[in-house]
View (cartoon, rainbow, N blue to C red):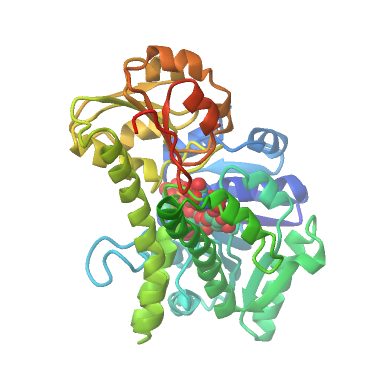
Length: 457
Ligand code: NAD
Ligand code: UGA
C-alpha cells in the first residue's frame, strides 16, 4: 500500500467518503474509526448504519481489501500519515454562543488524541464543516506537542448531499482543498490532491488558502438554503394572488443566471447542516462585528421556521380550526427523499405542533420509521407507525405529504380515499401529487403556493 489514510468519524460523511476513496484508490489503505461501537459493527456487517443508494456495492467492493472499520482510534492514529477528521460539529446548546455557535468539543478531542498518540509527522484534514479560522485553533493545539512533530492542516470540506452521496462523491462538481501558503502547507495540499486525482479531473479540483476553503463550505450551504427560503417566502405570496409557485419557479429558473435547481417550494429545508451552518455563519458575523450581515442570513432560518408554522396553520384553518382527536396520516418523515435521516426534518416540527393540538398521528415513511420513533419518543399523544401506506391512512381525516418520496405518487389514492373519514383532506407539503386528479376523486387538496382544490367552498 502506498499510504495509510485514517478517518475519525464514521457517520454520514466519513463512511461514504472513505468508502469511495478506498474504492477509487486500491493502493491506499483506508481505516475508518469511531467511538460508537454499534455504528462500527454495522459498517462491518451487511446492514450498513445509513441508507444511501449505491453505497452497499461500493463498501462490498473495498471492505476487507483496503477499507477497514474499527473502534481502535489509537491504533489508527499511530499507523496513518493522513488523518481526515469527520466528527460531528453540532450547534452549541450551552454557554457562550448557545443556539448559534458550533460546538467544537468533539473536534478538539480528536486534535488532542492525535497529539497524544502520534509518533511521526502527519497531515490532518478538516472534513467536518467548521467555523472559518478553526484551522488556526487546530494548529495551536497540534503545535503544543512536545515530541517535535510537524502537523500540516488542510481544509477539504465535503459537498455531498444525502440520498445522492455516492454519485456526488464519484462525480463531484468540485473538490475544494485549502492549505497554508507555506512550502510545507503546499506539499500537504499536493498529497491530498493526489488522492482525488485518482478519479476527479484536475480542472474540478480547486485549491485555495485555508480560510477561503473553510468559509466557502459555510457559504455554499447558506446560499443553497437561501434559495429555498426565497422560493418558500414567495409561495406564501402565490397563495394570496393566484400565481402558481411551480410556474414562477420554472419560468424564473430558465434565466441561465438563476438556473433551475433548488427552487422547489416545500414545508422547509431540513437536514443536519443547513440550519446549523447558517446559524454558525450568523454567529461568526456577530463575533466579527457585522450585525447587518448576521441579520441578513438569520432571516433565511426565520423564513424556514415560518414556512412550517404556516403549513400547520393552513391545516388547522381548513379542518374547521380543530384537529383534536382527529387522526392524521403523515406521509414522509425523512428530511428529504432517498434517505432514512430525519435530523432537523420539518416533519418533526409539523408533527410536534399537531400533537400539541391533540391530533392523533399515523406515520408512514419507506426508510425513516425507526428514526421517527426516536424523534417523537418523548412527545405526549397517540402516535402509530406504519410500513404500509393504506394501513397508515385508515380512519384518518387528512394526509400530509412531508417528504418528496417518488413512490407516494404511485399509491392508489382511490383505495386510500375509501378508508378515510370524510371530508378527506390532502395537504401536499412537497407539491408532488396530481392535485386535480385527487380533487376529482373526492379529496380536498391543499398544495403549497398554488390554488387549492376544495369541495367545501
Ligand atoms: P455524524 O454525526 O453522522 O457522524 C459523526 C461521527 O463522529 C459519529 O459517529 C461520532 O460517534 C463520531 N465521533 C465524534 N467524536 C469522535 C471522536 N473523538 N473519536 C471518534 N469518533 C468520534 O455526522 P455527519 O453527518 O457525518 O457530519 C460530520 C461533519 O460533516 C459535520 O461537520 C457536518 O457538518 C459535515 N457535513 C455533513 C454532511 C451530511 O450530509 N451529513 C455533508 C457535508 C458535510
Ligand atoms: C446539503 C447540501 O446540498 C450539500 O451540498 C452539503 O454537503 C450538505 O447539505 C451538508 O453540508 O450537510 P443535504 O442536506 O443532504 O445536502 O440535502 P439537500 O438536497 O441540500 O436538501 C436539504 C433540504 O432542502 C431538504 O430538506 C430538501 O427537501 C430541501 N429542499 C431542497 C427544498 O425544500 N427545495 C429544494 O429545491 C431543494
